[in-house]
Image (cartoon, rainbow, N blue to C red):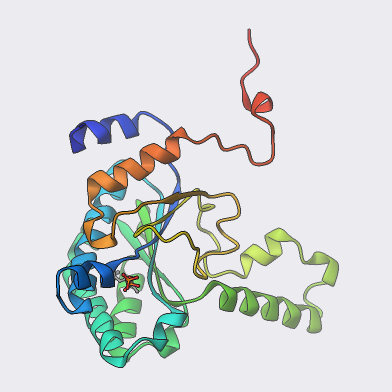
Length: 254
Ligand code: FPP
């Protein structure tokens, strides 16, 4: 078995994705398997957020988007929601220096109005404090749902048409994309979902149109650097064709 550092060296030698999305799944099961409250799984999961972000920054990835709390997660038991919100506040406090010192730009997508002020305010404050950073964009999807995002985008375009700012024919992929909360970020090249579930669960539906999907059976709290590097190595094995044939993608022989 390769050591983490040799795996990292290998992964660095091949083209890396610019933007990775991660569905961090399996925290609850990780805790239940150990007879612990579900929140302990989320707490351990927050440690993996730190490790994976560090590794992504070291590798020079441009953007990482993490599904931290979905719109549908508001239906969970209230104590779990409260626990997750407390973990988010704790994360913002603890990671502030690391984010600022490493020139990471923190970004957030989702319906922020629903978040408690104790999370929303420090979140927006750190986004603002790191807004000029250029090394890597770390986007937290919190209270996020992709269908909701698409509906909002369609509504904004309809308003622009109604106000005469845009013609119906002017609605193209570029105009649509510009209304999404991820506008300005590079295309998502790779989507990882942990815990063995093979679903997208309302995450970045538009943005993953050409992403390589990497499903790992590891539960998120066990998803360490080694598993992250393995996922990147799997991505690097794929041939991204974007509708072309394999032969078209091969460089012409001399
Ligand atoms: C899914 O696991 C995970 C979540 C709903 C929350 C993800 C949150 C974290 C990783 C920690 C906090 C985030 C940050 C950015 C500090 P699940 O609970 O659905 O797992 P299960 O399917 O095993 O029940």
